[in-house]
Length: 422
Image (cartoon, rainbow, N blue to C red; front, side, top):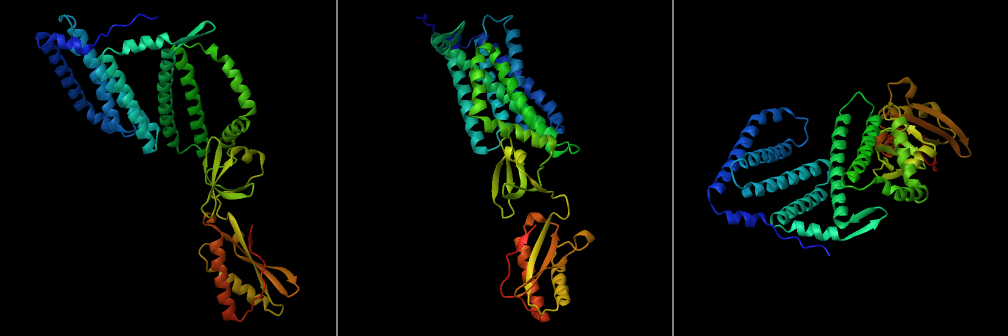
């Protein structure tokens, strides 16, 4: 059984000092440190105002002020220890400011890497309570006793001993490392997205690769930092590899396919694509899936693997004529076809969405077939804004054709085939 650790509280030490000269000198050191930090903030305010690219500048200034106060306190305590018999008040102030620095750093990092406000506030409150709780346990002298109790709860794995405290410490270090890695990844991503000369898909691919690499490095650096040998994880790594090979095969395939799509730029954000009977605009290319928004506003998550293994029909929005709309128009056999053609072209040219200036994409009328009960003409037009969809244009064309045919004395057949688009 482990020997009990005596309670050594900083509060009892300060209470035993009373209000003698030693305490007054320490209060003076605290005031001097605060004055120095206030002066440094005043001098650096203009500089930070010019650094507009720094994310969340106000929160960054608060973190910087807390760090400066911690540094000033450490220097002040070491200096005061040269002529004072004890520095209990400064010993209490150092962990207090250290806890403040930790809280501000965590809050600043979470505000930068966790966009949703509700989730961000939850993690900020959780981290603040955890840090201030550890500070309270430290100044009351209870933390060493908790540390000894958690060290006693341990198990042996080969030549390595794992205690509850070690696992908790590893979780904390890994958490900090992941927060730092995500912050760096977000900073690099914001810089990459600002490089307008680089293709958007390439920028996204580089940002995702950097994020993945930093997360892996964070774990690889954090585990040895707390004394956990990475060779112990070799068995777990083998099991994980088998799991990926079987249970997570599709996930791994979609993950790799996402990088391939971004790197070879076969599908780009903003393209109109058709894959597996799904048609829409590419809005996002994520790690596991690609988000398509159809012309009626609905969104579909298409696994990245499908964009590699299936045939993808792409209609780039950068091209002026990305979508052709066709309308079959049945007329009786005795109809003046030349007059009907003129009326159809007039109805097409009055639509704002129809291309009329480019000779390759002007409206055309085709004589499609001679049916049993009449003749089928086909009006083909090209639109310059395919993202708006073809349905509203078909309706506008039908109304315009009906009005012009009625005014020109041209009849329409009773039954009409279903309209389609190419």
